[in-house]
Length: 137
Image (cartoon, rainbow, N blue to C red; front, side, top):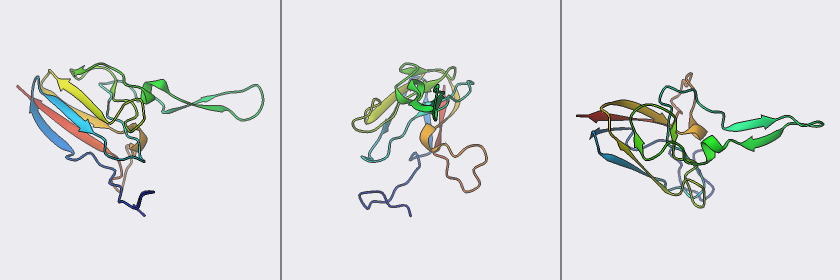
């Protein structure tokens, strides 16, 4: 089911999914779930980083490491559509905190997603946690 550990429904969506703003405006994402981390991630033409890194060991199974590129905030406070920008894991007490703000200085359309709930390009039932920011002059 869709119920979380606290019995509340989990909605794996950015709400609203689409926002239109003017160049120079700042968008704030607020994370309200105590049990489910999320990220706000813009790829800016770059390939998505792996969330978990598999490190081979001399013997036994590989060691699993959390990628610092996804765990911690990356890319600064202003976004122009280029380069990887990420909130880091949002939640309490996670590195990204419970709020993330990003200023958009260049007109355009910018898609973003949650690294942990991406769904992938072949997402037939719409489970991807994605959003879009449209920036006008």
